[in-house]
Image 1 (cartoon, rainbow, N blue to C red):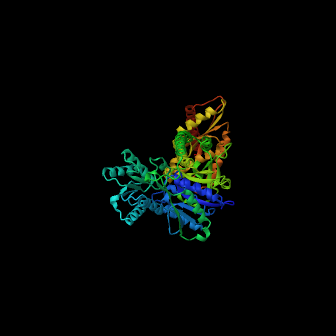
Image 2: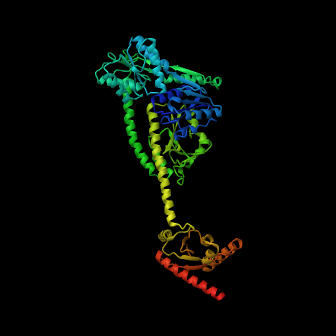
Image 3: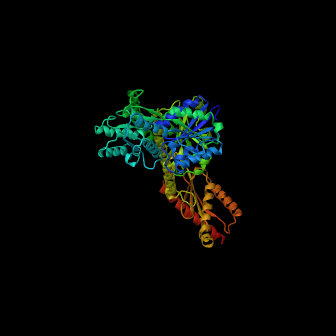
Amino acid sequence: MIGNKKIIAVCAARIQDEATNNYITALNDVVSRAGYGVIVYNTSTVLDMDNSADTRFYIYSLMDFSIIDVVIISQETIQNELVIQTIVQNAKNFDVPVIIIGGQRDDCISIRFDQEQGFEAMVRHMVEDHHMTDLHFMAGMRNNEFSDHRKEVFFKVMREHNLTADESVVSYGDFWSAPAEEATEKIIASGKLPQAIICANDKMAIAVCGVLNRHGIKIPEQVAVTGFDGVLEINFSSPRITSACCEAMDLAKKTLEVLTRINSLKGSAECFTVPARINMAESCGCKQKQPVDASRYLNSLNDRFYLYQHEAIQLSSVIANVQRCENAEQIVEQLRHHMFYDMCCVMEKDFLNEEMNPGEFAAERLQDINREMLVLFDCNHYDGFRPYPMSLKQIIPSIQYCLDTGRVIVLTALQHMGVPMGYVAFFFMRLNPTQGSRITQIANALNSALGGYRNMRYRNYLMNQIDEMSRIDTLTGMFNRRGFALAYQNLLEKEQDNLQLTIILADLDRLKYINDTFGHKEGDFAIRTVADALVAVCPEGSLFNRFGGDEMLGVCCGRLEPEDIRTAFTEYFSKFNSNSDKPYEVDASIGVYITSEQDRLSFEELIERSDRLMYEEKERHRQKLLNKQ
């Protein structure tokens, strides 16, 4: 529950499809008046693969059962047993009741259309009302549950009337146009036209009518045709097609009826059915009871088609622009587009982490419903908007307002190359087919845009890392010769003309002795110690270069007193050696050179002076040792 609203979480797929869209719209209309809010967890494709690890399951992992009062699962659209079972089990863990729509399970309450009754009424209409005896069944796919059920019903009615009921009167159109057309051509080629072709769905019925019309076979005078499902397109077939319609509003009202009894039904597996309605039309020889305003439907379809084309062109531009962005603020600017209304983008928190491989995804974080997310874009806040953190439990920034105003909230996952990135949330006062299509269209565009952005930023990060590796000495972390040359040139270009530089050279003493006696690993340790000393002595902003094997160079802006520098080194090594457990002492020869204000040494000149300084320092150090002897 959120505020005073009980929450219904609808798990569905393909909200752009008319049947799914109509049910969710009708459900929201019915239940919002009864004090419920609807949040839809939607995927753009049917989850028909038996693979619960599919990243499309990500959207259902976002469900917070602590605020959900009822879960509704559209089994007919999800079609993935492992995904459905996971949702059911998660709901049971929180004692949240589950209602299955479009199917039946022995562990949940179920509501389904009585499609067998509807299809049986269709077959009986042709046999008993039109007195036809020679019927042919256009089935879906072989060994398909829905197709097989309808074939069994067809055979049942045919046997009751002592009519042929075997595979000789069955063709398979795979629930789709092209296979149905091919099957119809074979029926015509056989020379034995049936009185009627009963189709398992409307798409095949439309295809059958098209083939019959092309061959000049009159419908229904020579061959009657019926469909099933009641899709919009049957109203524009020639002639209009008789079909059984499963009304979304009937299903929504039955759902509310079950919700009012949900407490008493908890734990039961009762199945409720909703009868299908037969809509008579000319294709079976009947007259349509309610004439269809074809112009209104055609205008709607025409608007959706051209709107889709227009928006596809605009979205392609947005995709390209987002992929070229360099930061989140620039992404927000690109999404300030008239297409991105009634929506927000909520991303996984690490979306803006350029150092993270976009292909990496920690599956264990799916278990953390309390994790922090990132609101990347919110259509309700334009001026001065910057991405900000939000708890996943909040779902969307304006959740309470959307529920109070009766809006239906639709969440669709954002993913790129199989890796979840977050989700896009839409909040509409009322769904319609155009909005359903836009949900999928915009989600797909954001997948490409934001996924491309992440890939580009990570690629730039890797390129910078490679460039950094080519400029840095891995042992000391100082610049190598190439890196130092670039940094020194940048320093000269940035600083004012009259710039004094203090150049410090540090040369590790007795490296050969350490290597020969204690090994090269200890020699490397001694080199790093001298490098650390040089960095510690020099002021912030200085440049460092590993000049040779055991020689380091520091370039400091401004004048530093040579004696102060040598004293600092002496104190550093004294403290280090007194606290070190090494069997040797680390020390270094130190040379200091200060340029005049008029000097502006090129890189080559700096190296030449440094070489000379190092030679002089080594000679001074050698003389010092000889004098001690």
